[in-house]
Structures are given as structure tokens and as C-alpha cells.
Image 1 (cartoon, rainbow, N blue to C red):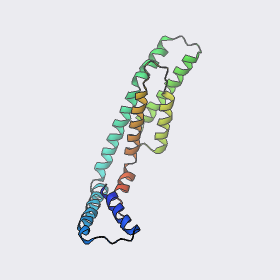
Image 2 (cartoon, helix red, strand yellow):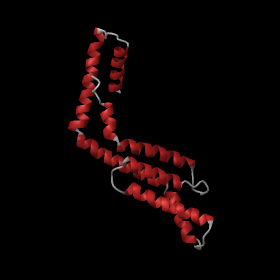
Image 3 (spheres, helix red, strand yellow):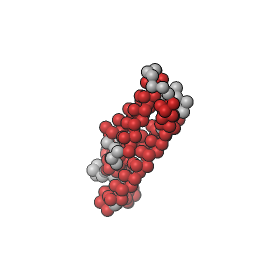
Image 4 (tube, rainbow, N blue to C red):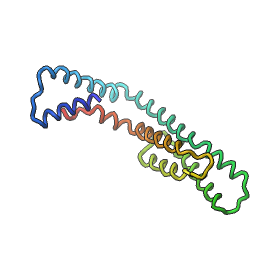
Length: 171
């Protein structure tokens, strides 16, 4: 935020060709120092801490995302165990959901990195798991999944987020 405030203040003065008042200079200089110290702290000194926190947070978010569909997994497993294996529309839907849940499990429990492509594959699996006819299905689960997926994407891209937040190249 400090970087954004500083950038907006300086750009507005530059755009309108306005001089910066002398009593604002100490505050602007202090803001520059704050942003530079945060950048140094996060990118140089505490880099291993940021990386380890990122990986742990990604694993927790992925586990939370998978737990949202645990009741659906149990329902499909119960259905598969209790039916005769004849082809019907319902058994085809259950097979589709089971395959998507298996894909989702593989994507979420795989490696600890979540690239944009992997996040997109998770979105596809989540969309295919959505079965409004299932008795365990709740639209709140999809909203929560969407929120967790946004968090997962943010954590997987933490380097770029920090780089943008601490960017002082406009000076």
C-alpha cells in the first residue's frame, strides 16, 4: 500500500506538472524508505521464510479445497458400492463425478507448486464435479471453492505480488 500511495502521489504531481511542497518531502522520503526496507526484507533477507510459508499455505489451502468435496466423494463411493453396474444416466453422472474427483485429488495432492495451468485444470475439475442433483451438493461449496482457488492462485504467485507491491522503479 505504501508503494501505491507513493506512486499515485508522485504520478499525480508529475501529470499535473505541480511542484511538491517542501513540507511533504520528509513524509515522501520516509515512505520511500519504508517501501525499500520492506522490499529488502522480503526479497533478500527473509526469502527462505517467504518460500517456506508459501509452500505451507498452498498445502493448507489445497487440503481445504479437497475437503469441501469429501462428502461428495463419500456419496459417490457409497453409490458405486451399492448399485448394479448397468448403464444408466445416473451411473454415467456418478462415473463422471468420480473421475473428476480423482483428477482433483491428483491435482491438489501432487507437487507443491501451483502454476496457472494447474490452477486452470483444478477449475475444470471443480466445474465437472458440480452436480446440482446430488443430495450432498451445496452452492456454498462452490463459492467457498472459488474463494479458496483465488487464495491458492494468489499464494502461488506470491513472488510477483511482492515484486509489484515493492516496485520502486518509478522513482
